[in-house]
Image 1 (tube, one colour):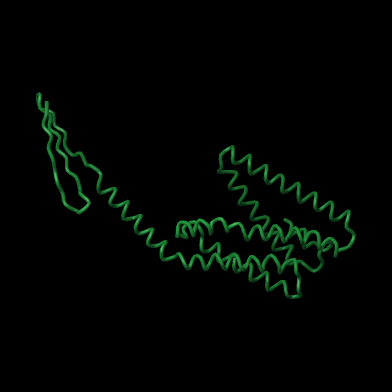
Image 2 (tube, rainbow, N blue to C red):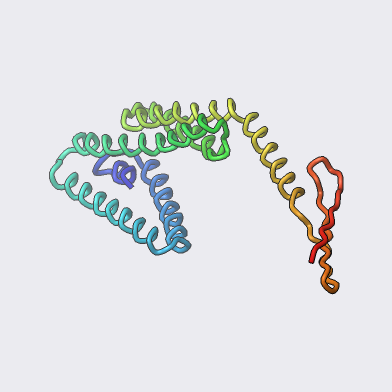
Length: 215
């Protein structure tokens, strides 16, 4: 939303691509939020609605203040551009917490590859666009975003093989756990004697049996 404001002709002239692309992105994000609200529980729904309301109020206040108190496009571009840089860097830096988890667990299961790849491509595209002509407000956040995304891809490459080994070990543990369960196949009660026959599948693949007699 702040990029849409930034790209308006009365704020930063000749930025139609910024307005159209960011406007489309805003619409898509609203769809994501709507889907989340539809399927989430009441507590989470209220929390997200509160955050969205705060963001909308923030955008409205910034728009009013910028268009009324600042009278040149240079001043407006400076203020809104700084806000855009802050939000964009926060967006690119958000996965850093996941990177810490990857290093701790030596697994990239919680860091989607295609999301990191798309983020890298997005950063490269916008960083390149920022030089046609040069626009520091677009170049700075997307340059940093490109480096953050590249770090994610490098991390993915480093821990990809260890992730596969972890998955294989987990599957083997699950298979061994299911094979080790008791299978009670026969319970017979005759007079005062009780017979319980059971067969078990051992971890080494052999089959054994045992009988218990009692009164």
